[in-house]
Length: 243
Image (cartoon, rainbow, N blue to C red; front, side, top):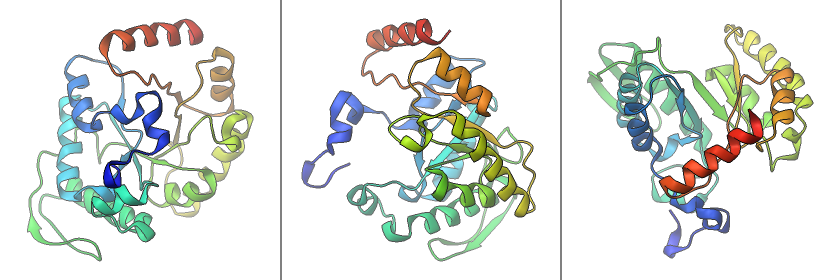
């Protein structure tokens, strides 16, 4: 969403501005798949109502049989954020409160919440997610900003594999993993299930292997296509390059 009809150049190039709503799209994908994981990369949490979002995530986890991975972020495009109701200067503070709200809604039968950004009396939010206590939460962003957030309220990290020089070298992921796991332990949380998913990785077999050796659990390749035929062609090209 751009103000005065303007679309940022980053989104306008290569059909990126045609990306569908992630939760609706993944609900469709869930009905025609059985095994693959389905995830957001990323869902802009402060731009959505957390009660509705909690129900949407739980519903998607139900439809997919517990295959959903909840990638979250706070956004960078101020105009879009403000149009959709986010407190842009404090968007990560808002994101944390919304995630707290959703966790309560997913894990309690009757939920009441009184916060800075949302306040509601006792209510029931159903269905509950298949995964317990809720789908894994992957926090997007660069290490310097994301590490503490992951340690406090995330289950995984969703860094961009390219166009961010800090992570183009797969060997640096190993040190980042150790750093985040230490922070998770400092928060008194279990670090054994911490997971790294590399997002927007170049389709390169050797680089994927290096990411895996460095501690990444999963690599996601972008297709940037706008129709079914070109999507199939893009998938075949990626498969040839990485398998």
